Length: 146
Ligand code: SF4
Image (spheres, rainbow, N blue to C red):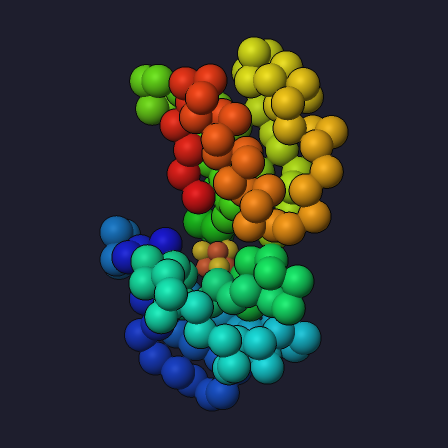
């Protein structure tokens, strides 16, 4: 999303005018009160240059939207994903919601695979868990974006 959402203007320390490079649309967003410090202290784009400028990694190693309450309609409609699952034709058939392990899909085969090999696995570390999920799904022929 870093290529799509751009901060055009800082209106005050917590308020920004942003633009969408694709549509030219503009919007005002504000930092969520409890994420202001996180936003200032931990810009993740040094390690993830393609990330949205409002995405942050919290102390639990979870990625969160720092403007969640005022996030753009595009984000509300499509939601940030932590892991996106594509079939061999490139269709989006499953996703893990941003900052969670909550998985949704309308594909029965993918749901079965998730329930059999991923849902019950105990991997506390978030990074290892993501790697495990990618390995299982990739081996089954799915394409993963994260
Ligand atoms: S939900 Fe938040 S972090 Fe994600 S793309 Fe939208 S503004 Fe950026």
